Each structure stands twice: as structure tokens, then as C-alpha cells.
Amino acid sequence: MKKKIYLLGGILLTIIIAFSCSSENSPSTENTPTLPIISTLTVTKSGTTTASSGGNISSDGGENITSRGVVWNTSQNPTIVNSKTIDGIGIGNFNSAITGLLANTTYYFRAYATNSVGTAYGNEITYITSAISTLPTLTTSSISNITASTAISGGNITSDGGSTIINRGIAWSINQNPIVTNSKTINGNGVGVFSSSITNLTANTTYYIRAYATNSIGTAYGSQVSFTTTSNSIATTVTDIDGNIYPTILICSQLWMKKNLNVSKYRNGDLIPQVQDATQWNNLTTGAWCYYANQTANGTVYGKLYNWYAVNDSRGLAPAGWHIPSNNEWVTLENCLGGWASAGFKMKEIGTAHWQPTNDGATNSSDFTGIPGGLRISNPGTVDFSQINYEGFWWSTSESSDYYGKTCRILNSDVGYLGTSAVDLIQGLSVRCLKD
Image (cartoon, rainbow, N blue to C red; front, side, top):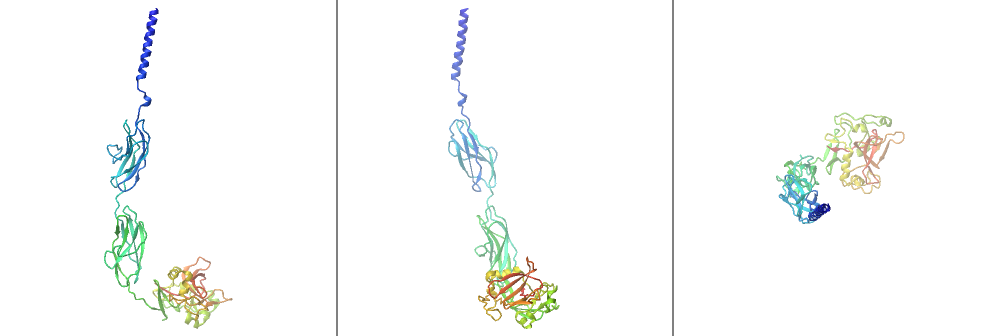
């Protein structure tokens, strides 16, 4: 019996020893290397056929990273047998400069990392390269506002060709197919519609123009358009329906009368009533005129004073081809003369023959020859007429935002501004006409 027990114990001991030796000699699964862990960085543009990307290796899998970079292809899931960069070794972030791409093509990118186990790939990123830049596409606008020395045109840039528009404008010449080495305007940058003012032209001359646009590739041109400037001759006088003759003066691009209007008929020949009585004048709702203080001698110098109803009558107060200026047209005049604050000096008649002393600063350099004809006001019973020799008042056709209905422009003996004021429709003011 003892022998059986000893024999059984020996067998068990042998099994334990054998199992122990087997466990010591088997490999540990805790130290088995694996593929690296890597993510792909965003692909960014660096050119039409180049890009930038990279990767982030967060684990080497227990073995050294022997190669890393970015792979790409026009098919999904690119590998290292496709195009690739080689960007050093080791874990962490790395950057990749990608070259040799085709323009306007869809590519698939993955970062990769290689260790002794093999090659692992990051997430796939899709990227489309930009098209190759070309010259811009544009058209030339039609010509307008042609004078003896100026014209207006422009262009419409419908495509920048894939590259930013850095210059645009109009090129012109007396020869066909003008280019930017000829005369040109410069009108900003970017795509879309633009306008160009062409200046310093010669009268009665044919010009050729083309819109142009420049990007990094070069300069493109719109279609050619031609026009002929007008003659330099400008009428020096205009005659109204009564036969009154008014000298004219060209100030910048505007042709003005040099004297106040003195007509007694509408353009169609209908009489405009002369109204002297203050109460009757105050109650008018139709056109009328008067002389300042009802004195004919004042009309000889200052012209007639008209209420708004005469100015606005559809039969026409101004001679044919002329009109009463809007406030914006008065603004054009004042801007041409350096702004409202000093334009008056350049518009007022020199001296004190008509202006109250001292009229300092008046130069009349514009030859507008403004004189102070005063006004007829709308509150009889106090003062019916006022401001002669001190201020001149001229109608505009523009509405006023004030209580009163319309806007007038004012010259004053003491200052150099061209003033603006709201006026009642029944007030009597001077009129200066402007060529259509």
C-alpha cells in the first residue's frame, strides 16, 4: 500500500515540475510588439500642384519607428507602394511637403508609420487641388457722357482666372487694340462691375478703349469699343423766348447762365403773371413773378423773382435745352469749386457795385458772377422783400426734409460759403439755368 502511495506522489511531482518548466520557457504575451498608432494631419494648400500635411504618431507599438510620412493616390486607401514622402523616424508630430500633384484633381492622403511589425496608416483625408490659374475674363462697358475732353466707360470682370485681380481699369489710344502701356485708368481690384472716368482727351478725335484686368498670370482685355469726342465749340450765349440774351460759362463739366433769368413767358409762349400785391402773392398756388420791391430797375440788374409754381410748371420756365438745377447739380458745382465752405468766394461778383461792403474774399474765379438779388418772403404785413445787396437766393428743384417744401442755394456778402436752405413754395427767388 505504501508503494502505491509513493508511486502516485512521484507521478504528481513529475507533472508539477514539467508544467513549471514549460511555463518558464513559453514567450510572454505582455511584451509582444504591435503596429504603430498614427493619425493624419489636415491637408492644406501651398500651391496649385503642392500641398502640406503630416501625421501624429502617438505609439510606436513597442518597436522603433523606422520610417514615417504621408502617402497619396487618386484612389482611396493609398499605401507606401503609391506616392509618398519620407519624413524621418520616431514618434510625435511630423510635417510633410507634398509635391508633384496634378491641378484640379481629387487625391486621398494617409499618414503612415513603419516599425518591425509592419506599416500602419492614419485616417484618410480627401483633398482637391485647385485649377491652374488663367488670365481673367472680362467685357468692356459701353461709352457714355462723351464730351470734348471726357467720357465714361468701365468693365465687368466675370472671372479672375483662379488668381486675385490686382489691377483693373480702361486702356485707351487713338490706335486700335490699346494696352496698359498706353493711357489707362486704374480702378481698384477684384471681380465684378467697375466704372472709369476717362479724361484729358482731345476734342473731335476718335479713340479706342478696352477694359483690362491683371492677375498673377498677366493682363487680359475686354472687347474694343470706339467713340469720337465732341467738338470743343460751346455756345457762349442762350436766348429765352422773350429775346433776352444770357452769356454762358462752362464750369468744370457744367454750362451755366452767367445772369439771372428775366423771362416773362413759359417756353410754350404762355404769359407768366406779374403779381405785385403782397396779399395776392401770398395766396398764390400758380406761377408768378415780380421785381424786387416791384421796381423795374431791379429787374434790369438782378432779373425777376419767381415763385416755386413758376419754376415747376410743366410748360417750362428755362429756355429749350436748359433746366432749373437740382440740389445735386448745385453740389457738383460747389465740389468743383473746392467745397461749399469756400465755393462762394469763387462765385461772387467782385467789388461792391452790387454787393454790400465789404464783400472781402470774392474772386469770381469761376466767372459765375453771382449777385445779391434778395428775395420776396411769404409773410406780408411785416417785410415783403428782403436782403437785396446782401444775399442772393437761387431755386433748386429738390425737395427739402424741413417743414418748408424746397431747397435753395445762397450767396452772402460776409462769407465765402455756398449755403443751402429750405424755402416756402410762395417765396420769390432768383433763377439760374443749367444746360441739359
